[in-house]
Image (cartoon, rainbow, N blue to C red; front, side, top):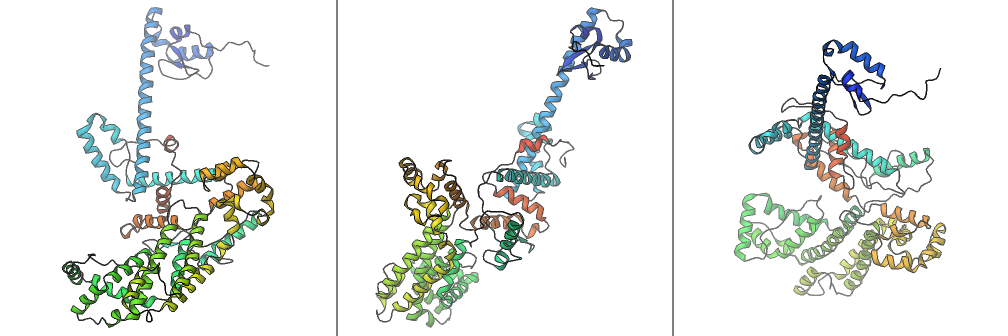
Length: 551
């Protein structure tokens, strides 16, 4: 039999005095024991009162009952406020531990240092705000807690990325490999190596296989890091013998403290413009040009110093060697300038490709000028050429090297040349020949090029920002622009990540697990995403047990 719709289950005020109940958050609550009654019916409330509290309060008259109810209600509110305050303090302590854990990860500090930091924090609290000591004590910063918090923060960032990725039109992966302090390979592949390009076991092969399994219709574009390719192009010059001699000289001066001090004193006595020569390492590409230029500028002082040490300087004084040194200094300076153009976060691949194309054009110009005996863009060569006879300076030899370097650039950047049409659609869509554009975007491209409003917007905001103004009526162009903007021009971000990894997993932290290392790196490298600490804290419960507390 169905219940009557007219049944009244609203809480009546008279029940407060009669049964010592009140109404809190849509539920009747006993003022004596705090028990909630599920259904707001007089029978249920009366039954609870008569079975639990009737004997204790039966002798009170209505005035006394009303007074007792008010006292109990005040006590209940006080308890609720105390509970809210305790809950608020607990949540604040958990949030604080997450915030500290995030800062620890970003600074690459060990987890166990935070216990020391907690002790320092408590001593400061004793002096500055002793009344807040318990609140500070509630913040758990034990090693295990900080490690767990770090993993939670990294997982939250990963979840955010996966959710955000559902709306991606296109995305790219910048992949490289390096070993940590325990010789464990981190990340998945090396740029340009078989591990990257292998048809079956390489990363590209595995991605292609996965795309076939999932029936993905999207295009997979594969290319090598522009910065790495530019650095490898320099090896085509085959002038290692010059660099080897320079490195040996620098190492003789810098390797021993006595030689180094004496050389600096010697430069000071000579009144030299420079006070020292820098070290060179293969890993630091830009150091090559700096070392060469400094050694060229100090070539006479270096020879004199080596002679005082009984070293043979005949090779360093040979005209052939000096000419080769001057040429290598100049071309290395040009390559370093290009390298600096290509570096940096947020570089658009079309701009990087344009820099490479410009350098290839410069190489052709320099080759022609060198053949004519006019090294006007090579200041070191000009300096040496002025000191020796024009007939001795090997212009033809250096022109040939510039030709070889240009050919190497063309070979290594052939995969980028194949993308030239797509790059132009992003860098200057209004200048693209419609007939040479892909057929699926030709109609939209015509509409775009004939729209004066969009052309004005392009001129105002530039190529990088313009795609966001392409209207929804041009979906193919929007997709094409998204694909180009998503492409990494280099593994610059990977190199930054490796630097963080070296600072994080040092020889003193070899026991740091891969899980914790990945978590730390994910937090320290996140740029557009921030951990949702409020969400994480709401899922945790703070337990206080002194300095070594844990959740």
